[in-house]
Amino acid sequence: MKATLTITSRGVVTLPVKLRRALGLKADDQLIAETTPEGLLLRPAVTLPLEVYTLEREREFDEAEADLAALLEDRTSPARGRSPN
Image (cartoon, one colour):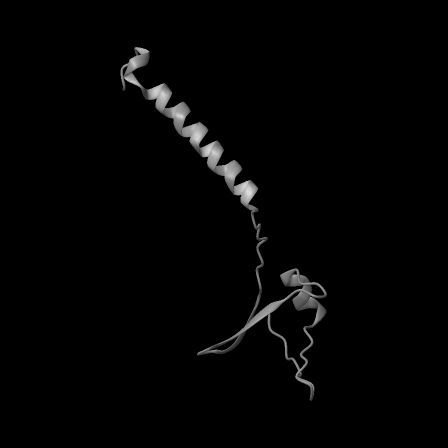
């Protein structure tokens, strides 16, 4: 789909409704503008949620990993009478 756009004196570009609908864009969505050999490329910016862990939460992860490692070690230990396959 192609469209002719106009840039205002303030640098504002309005995307026609057909383009916005085709791309699933809505008010306040962010776009990345990038120059390419062909011209200007506009593409939706993808944002991913970022979770910041507290020291307490990191300790919980460490404990869970230690528990899992112990369980796996126990299950693969030859002392239990199982032969490793």
